[in-house]
Image (cartoon, rainbow, N blue to C red):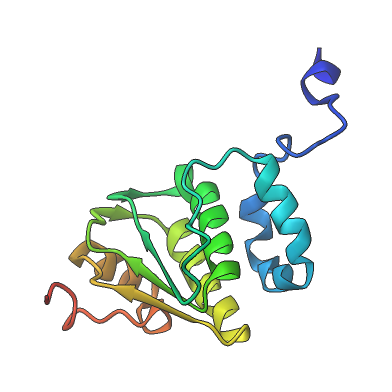
Length: 151
């Protein structure tokens, strides 16, 4: 019975835990951008970014951002980073965020810097800023309690 569940030759849907382990390895993704496109086509993705916009993309974080959605968020962010020169992340609706999501955002910013792209976290909620400060990544994510909530 186990061979029946994972016996498919494609192997794409099998590694359910793999994205969390590969987050640190993503800076090498642009070298194999063709492979990322093939993976994106084989995985069902209802929220693919529009191909006509080339300059800046926007991602809105869910109010409850936790490890259950981090793989999907990782996939979306990597697609957006490959497609756009600048990426805005709207964190205004975040009411709860965990370490895995914050780690993903730190890696995203580092990856973007290496690719000479810009990632900005716009309007971080009070809970987002508190969690980033508690984890010690608020400077890396460039979120400041004094600026959050304005506008």
